[in-house]
Image (cartoon, rainbow, N blue to C red; front, side):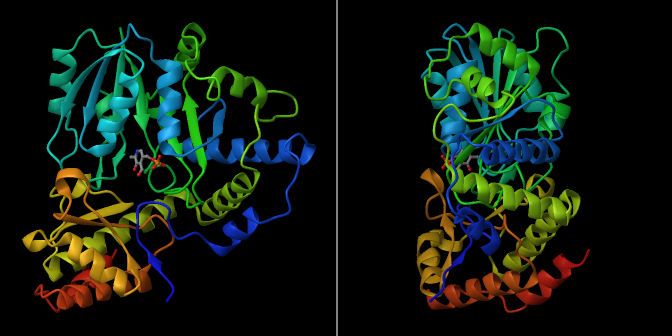
Length: 379
Ligand code: PLP
C-alpha cells in the first residue's frame, strides 16, 4: 500500500523534483554546475528577500545549526537561548559545545515566545552577545513571530541573532534580512519540499564580519571557505556537493516561484486552519491554543487519554504516516505536517484516516468533522 506521508520531514515530494535529482551526474567542477549554483543563489535570495550568498552545505538541519555555532560563536560569548521545545533545546546544546556560557529561558510547550517574555529575558541578561531563537518549533507546532521579537532589540549593543529556520523556510514568510536576523539555518526536507541532505545558511554583513574574527571550529563547515568558493567567477563548492539533491532543490524552488510565494504561504495556512477545525470536531484539540502561533507547516493535536502512540500506529495500518510527540509529549500529541502541496483531497484523506484510526483504538470521535473542516477551509 502506498504510504501517505504527513511527517515533518521528509515530506511528500513532487515527481518532477525527484526526477530532477535522478538526472545524469555532472562534474561539480564544470560550467553546468556553476550555472546551477548561480541559479540556486538567485532563487534562494528571492525566497528570503536577502542580499549576499546563501551557503549550500551537505547535511541536514542539525548540520546547518552546527555550522552557525562553529563559525559565529566564540568561547567568550554570552549566549541567551529562548526555547519553546525540543529544537530550541538542541540549538542551545550545540552552541554550548563551543564553550560559551548559555543562559536558558524556556516557555511552556505549545506556547510561542511572547514579547513580554522576550523583553524580560533581555533585561535579565544584558550582557548577551549572541541570541538564539527558533522560527518554527516543530516539536509543538508553534511559530514564533521573529519580526515582532527582533523589533524589541536595542540599536546599540545588539547581540548577534541566530535563528533556526529549519522547519519554516519555504512554507511561510521568512525574511531574515528584513527582520534583523544575523544567521539563519535551514534544510531541504521540510518547507523546501526536497529530499533531505542539503543544509542552508544565510549570514548578515555583521555575521560575516564576526566570522572573520572567530576562527572556524569546523574544517568542513568553514563558512569563509564556502563563501570564497561560491564567489569565484565560476562558483563551486570546496568539497564534493550532493549534486542530485541540488538539482532537486532547483526544481522545487522553480515550482514554488511559479505558484508564487504569497499564494504558497496562504495555501499552507489555509490547510492548517481547516485541519485544526476538522481535528477539533473529531475530539483532537489543537495543542497550540493561540491561533496566531499555530504553524502553517505542522499541526500538533492533543490525543485524549494519552493514546497518541496507539493512534499513530492505527494510522500507519491505514497507510498514513504521522509523527508522535517528543520527550515529555510522547503519547500526548500527534503531529501532522503539511509542507507540500496538500489541498482539500489530502485534508479529507487525513481526517478520514484519523476518524478510522480513532474508531479502531476505541476513541470516540465526532462525526461532523468534514463539515467543520469545510468551514475552516472557507477563505
Ligand atoms: N530544527 C528544527 C526546527 C527542526 O524541525 C529539525 C528537524 O525536525 C531540526 C532542527 C533538525 O533537523 P535535521 O533532522 O534535519 O537535522
